[in-house]
Every structure is written in C-alpha cells, then in structure tokens.
Image 1 (spheres, rainbow, N blue to C red):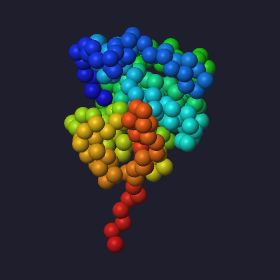
Image 2 (cartoon, helix red, strand yellow; image 1 turned 45 degrees about the horizontal axis):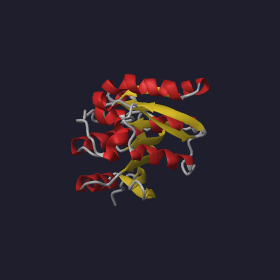
Image 3 (cartoon, one colour; image 1 turned 90 degrees about the vertical axis):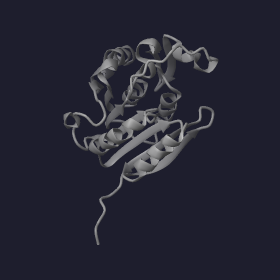
Image 4 (cartoon, rainbow, N blue to C red; image 1 turned 90 degrees about the horizontal axis):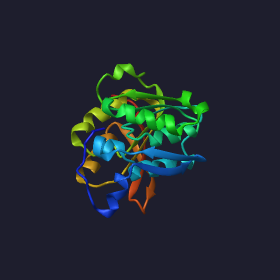
Length: 218
C-alpha cells in the first residue's frame, strides 16, 4: 500500500531485495519480476508473503479458473500474474506511482493469450471505491499488505466494498508486531477468519476470510 523508499540495507538476508529482478516458476511458467527498491521501496520488491501466496494458489484449494479476482497492494504484481496464469480474470491494483512499474511486469510475464485477462488499475484503499463494483469479485488477494496501522480502517472498508457474501479473501502475511494481530482482530469483527496455511521456513501465514452474515436483532 505505502510506497516507502528504503535506505540501502547491507544485511545478507535482505540483499535479494536489492537485485534488479527476481525469478520464479509458477503455474508452469518461468517468471522474471523486475525490482526497484531504490525508486519505489517496498512496492517494488518481491516479498516472501507473495511467494507463499503463489505457492498456496498452486495447491488449488481456492477455485480461480474463470473467477473475477482483485489483488490489493500488488507491488511487483507476482500474485496477480500467477492468479491469471491459473485462469482468473484479475484486476491488479496499487497506488498511482507504482502503476507503470507494475504494468511492465505484467506485460513481460503474461503470454499474449493471457494479456486480456488482466487489468492494472489504481486503487488507494478507502478512496474512489465506487469505481469498483460493490461485491463484484469472487476472490480478493493481498500479500504482505498489513503493516501500517493508518491503513487498517481504509483497508477494511475496501474489503467490505469489494466482497459479496460469497467472496473469498486470501491474505498472506508475517506476524511481526502486535499491530498485525490487532488487524486480524479488527478483521474478525466483520469477517470470518481462518488460518489455512503456514510456511514455517518463511514464517508466513495465509488467512482465508469471508463476510460475516448480517446480524439479526431479536
């Protein structure tokens, strides 16, 4: 969500984030995602949560073929690209400064016959939501988008707008701080939330959520 440039970090564990590209194989396709840490910061590198989300999508536990999906805070676009390769019609979103970079990755990694299944679009959470159909998506995807407390309420409003009673929300994240669990508590007030996958090596959890039914006053 937030486009936060980071100062060069020499820690070995973070060195891969400073590479100009990251390579993966998902959905029987070799993918090469451009990265640009210095220009766009966290929005322009592939985080472990995106990788784990793609691994989970490949398991086929959530139907994607022919489904309308939207990725929030897409960054490099890896998750949305993989969802499209798995058969979804995907709207891949981020804030305006990241869109050219995001579009370049999408065009470079989708074969010609899949290009029409993806739309890259600007979305700042909580703003201009009427540009997106209310309850108009079957699947909502977000990888490592829960880390700034100021974005929690706008993100929740966005999820509520995008989701119908049958929409599946998948969030992949690392639980780093108390604020991360606070967000999950906020989410549980409006959605049913289940942890459906845990990657122990990367310490990434995938949560599946769907809207709570309307309360009935007795």
